[in-house]
Length: 78
Image 1: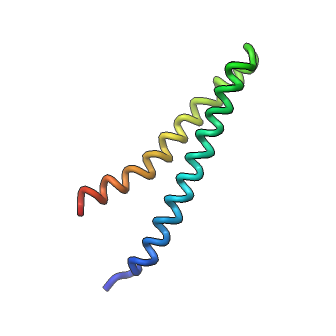
Image 2: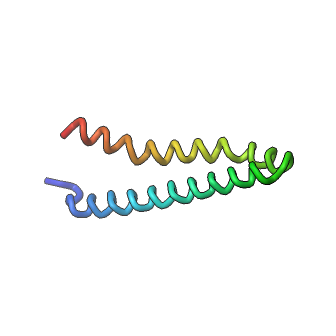
């Protein structure tokens, strides 16, 4: 007896995959924007961007891992 039907799980999986991909896309766009501001902002712009870029990169890595780890685990147990 399945507690949740596979069709519903597939719908949730697709929704979250699209959501994570959209968030990852936005984070990369923001990273490009900060890179542009770093290059053109002078010393003040560089200091401002420097404090914001590390959390952004950590967020990109976390989103990427949130997408990748379940796929790897699923592939191992199939």
